Image 1 (spheres, rainbow, N blue to C red):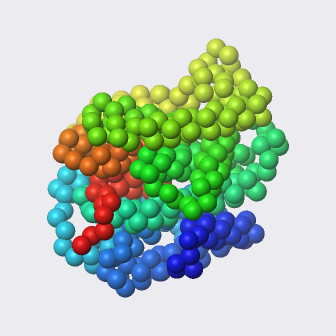
Image 2: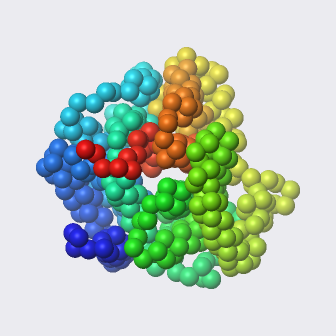
Image 3: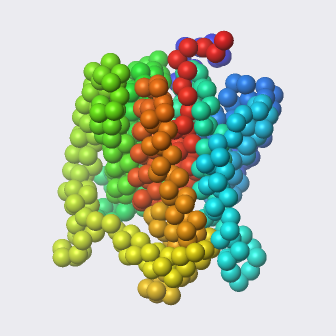
Amino acid sequence: MKNSPFKAEIFLVINLAIAMSMLINPRLSEIYSIIIVLYGMYKIMAKKNSDGAAHVFAAYTVGIEVLFRMNSGGFSYEWGKYAVVLFLTLGFLVGGKKKIPISFVILILMLLPSIMYVAFGSFDLSRQMVSFNLSGPITLGVAGIYFYRRKIPLPQFRRVLLAMLYPIAAMSIFVYFRSGSLEDVEFTTESNFQASGGFGPNQVSTIFGLGIMIVALAYFLNIRLFRLKYIGVILLLSFLVRGLATFSRGGMLAPAIAIALTIIIMTLMDSRFKEKLNRVVYAFFFIFVIGFFGFYYVNEVSGGLLEMRFKGESMYNKEKSNMFSGREEIFEEDITIFKDNALTGVGPGMATFKRGEISGIEAAAHIEYSRLMAEHGVFGIGVIFILIVLPIVTFFRLKSTDDRIILVMCTAFVFVTLGHAAMRTAAPGFIYGLAYIHLLRRPIR
């Protein structure tokens, strides 16, 4: 199989089989998650990460994390973030010396002071809240340190994209068999757990959106993921339909905005992008057509409720806007908390309970920006500043059009994701770090 021209297709089928096995026995996710960590560590150390095993296994972890969460969460609920940090840290350490980007080190350090303000009823609860709220930003920081200006050959980068894509495709099959046909789903103008395989629609939609972004990025960079070219079309349509059916809009808007911004920014700022423009326009038109038919199909199946959902309309209350699904109230409460604790913040996870004191509802943040401000104070603003300014500065330093495309599309996807799904999965942190690679079209000599 090593030299098979259909290697990608074979691995895709294997991952589909893994998803089907978890339908039969959900507890298998725990075994699989342990195997991935142990085998990944072995592969990284065996060749001292010379083949990029660390970022390939980390990418696979990003793709399969939510599928595991649908099945008891793997070894633990936060397994995905822990595994990504483990793989990338190990790969960094055994792969030889490399200059450490100070910006990401500062970002991680600014997350630590607020820990001393965490005050829950028990040590175990405090540990859980710190882990849940800091593991995402820590993943981003570690990914940034690992990937920043790392030279990755094109075949290896293709492996990274495929490693994420395999389990996302498996998740689409899993959701189909667990949820059944969309004709059997009972839709409202709210996020739909039934169409999301019984799990959180926000996270499911986010990962399907990631799948769309990966396929689009491959088209933009002229990377052929599968020998059978129609597999990409099928996957794209599957991600769109299943992602739209969750009625969680952010996950579908993120790749759409990322694609549009990439075309606009690159057209205006990179003269060499014109050489790729014909292919990019074709790719954009192709994705747009598939998106249109996907939206039309789900809207018809839902009786027009999908259109109402994207307009922010509620089927229960015609007068009340449903545009932000209550996120604006949480955002405003976070700003209030920040104003009262501007210097240090209230500590990781503490904002959830502070919101309860304000509105009577202990809601977890969906917007990472306001959560950082509320829980980390001025240090949180510092983190946000680095997240926004670093890609802008890096963009103007880059000479490669390929690197600029990767940077813009990946960071745009992350910025939108942080605005609706925070860092509940490892995906935004990993993708933000991946944005800073240096893609090599020619083999390393």
